[in-house]
Picture 1 (cartoon, rainbow, N blue to C red):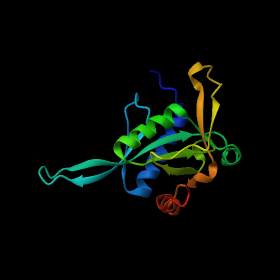
Picture 2 (cartoon, rainbow, N blue to C red):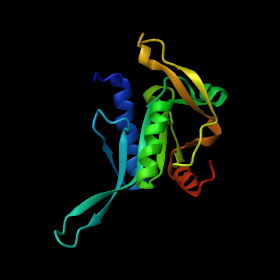
Picture 3 (tube, one colour):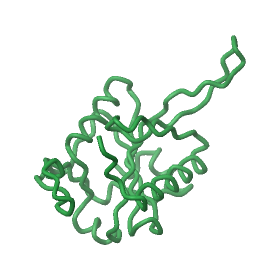
Length: 168
């Protein structure tokens, strides 16, 4: 399976991962490249037998870098493939962990936005579409549309707002 993410998107994802770790105090583990899910967000607990810190999952995370400015998404909503949306739901349903969608707009220099979902979350609508610039047939598929008002800028205040559920 080829890596389809550009170097700038990989850089933006790494910066976003560091931001999430700094703001939340959790570790963010990049999952295997064949996983449909980008991250597992982990806390650490002390194993009383081995006295080693062991990570435990607190949420899943999916990162998307977008070159458009945030105003584009305010008008059109955020799209994520139904395949990816379903993978996040299955993981959330089987583990009872929430999942976060992180969106970095305006290339790697733009702000980071996030929203928290769970296994009961539903998209605002479903459309057929996707990327057309790569010429890959697999890029065109059903997409979940999430209204932009579900997302909050991810900083210390925004993180608290997301956790309180005020942005759902």
